[in-house]
Image (cartoon, rainbow over the protein chains, first blue to last red):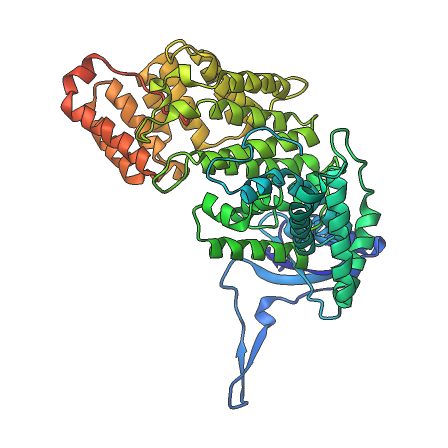
Length: 116
Length: 443
């Protein structure tokens, strides 16, 4: 079963990275996931100031706006999709994610299965 | 049928069908757990469990009870489940995947000595108390899947409309199914993290039944007894876990005072005024044995320590001869294990019994800024008691009035009103003869 781990960065340091973990932490975690054979995909997202929002109205016209900007302390900073047998295993991987430390958090969401 | 003690079947006023149904309650939990393990789906397991029990209700009175009733029920239920899966191939395909993974995870345990079914309820305890479920749903699910209560009974127990409870149970089961919360017993390395959650669910069922947070009745005995029944099952499944012994001991030692805790009109009677002759001696003895089990062989846990405190109260002939130094010492241990302003409040009240009201009041006043005690009526009530013992009656009245505004149940409010009017009617008398009171969370 596939789960998406949504990584919410808490406090951001001056270099734009989460302050509670290092690049090495992420590299090690990434490698662990691949070695365990559960990695499906994953990306880390560029800074929120680069984000742009698109909406299409009933008349079919598009509205493009800068942002969104962080209204809460937590900002989606990246994600992983993993394939594991059940929620307990997914929660274990979420707990090991460097982004779960300190003021960060990881939200675990099952990927909807419309197949069976 | 096995009997877990407590809540026996056949209460007066039940129809014969209902009383037979309650005999099956114990079996229902076992059956459900076995079927969930085999089919990996709670809804399917619940449906075929009910069907098998219905079939037994029809057949057994006519054909006699089979030699292995548990085995008969399981075979019947499995047959129904297989029939259903034949009719619904897509469903079957999905469950087949679940099943392969479940089989890979752990082998089925063998049947235990006292039953003809393997006892697979432990994994159900952990699933129902899973931290990924909403806290309010865990108790409801545990009562339904392990205590064998029907949804309307669970709704009545929690004082919510049946439709609301049905929605909550549907929501919880949907999360189990769709997020794939597994039916598994956590490994030894995870147990210290997960067992407290299971104990918390059982204890919250107990406290909910014991001091309903709202509504006219102070005690809802059924829920307290259900919690004790669940803890007995868990104790048999995890005999080496000392905190399970501690929790069962704590509940028995508190529940032993049930008859003395309310007066003839349902009014609250606190520890200091309870007729200790009405305490359940057999239950106290059982609880004391569990305290010993909980406190030997390793470091004490919070339930074991609370059980030990309850035992000290139960052993004392009256309030004055209670071993207060020991009670305070145990609260110190509890405070170190689970630092909380509520524990500190109880410790302050016990200290007042040991060292006098002045010392207790000083400790209480240190807690004045605690957000957790804001809106917690035992805090102003305890202050009121100590102020009254010090003869500071106008301040005591203010504290009691504050508590009165916060108390949730009518018996609690009536009790506080009585204290308040005692201040007004007999101010001199109460100054001369300060009546001790220990409302320190002990019921």
